[in-house]
Length: 370
Image (cartoon, rainbow, N blue to C red):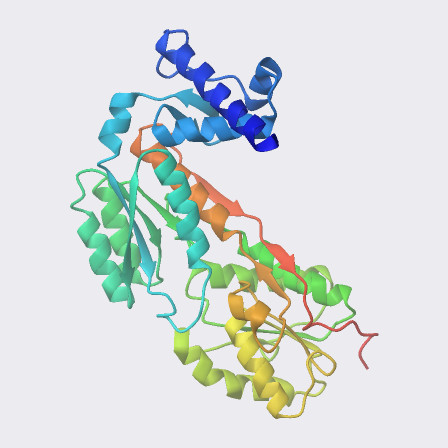
């Protein structure tokens, strides 16, 4: 009985809205009442109203605009946009030596773009040079746009500038180009870096170290910046010995990690906790520590960043910082839709999404260290 009621409810929403559009009561571009107003008018729960609206958005009868509301769509425009393709320029899964939360971004992109009638495809690259080639190919797009997981490097930034000069709509994710007027949706990694320090200090740790891949992209640089800010806020000392920048990116960082970790563990006094720029570094470090007879977290606490799958299901349940990857994809898709439909303003949309702390078993609470 309850299933039938829900089905009748959202069908009633669709029928009511269709009739008002077909009768001319709501013309193309008209803004619909809010979900709360429709809930009150139709006597149907807000969840059911939202479900009915979502079906009409998927059909192309309605369009949602980020931060504005739901509007009657131009069906002729919908027919045109269905032939418009959007390219997600993404690294190969695991191709750069470490797992990153890319699937959530792709899911969010698809959800946003498909709801507005745009087709979405993925083009993978293995090296920064391959990404440059993909970006240059996008210059030939007569219609459509791109969402770009940007690699660091002068050639890649130059390719992004060429896209902008060619007036190809695009949105950056994961990392942005400092000082460039481009649209992007990224994690607030400065806030994420501070979360690492705040949690460790809250558990009694005051001798902290940080190990990072090269700060050659804004995501890595911002995490380091946030960590240093956290140390300053808590009036904790820091030095080049406790802030370790690995010389190589990707798999290369894994190769040089053991020597860097051994140096930290040999310090007197030794850190009571080490945070890492990525989960995979923390998990590899945990195995290295165990080989040396150290217990995690009893003898040494570890934290990571990204909340990849192995952080939950591997040998160590890792305390980490999680990015809102799904939200990143949704925002990027929404912004690109605005660019493709001419609804974006002159100023770029630059969104920093809030990260979250995920507490597991790799951090011990301690009294003040000796």
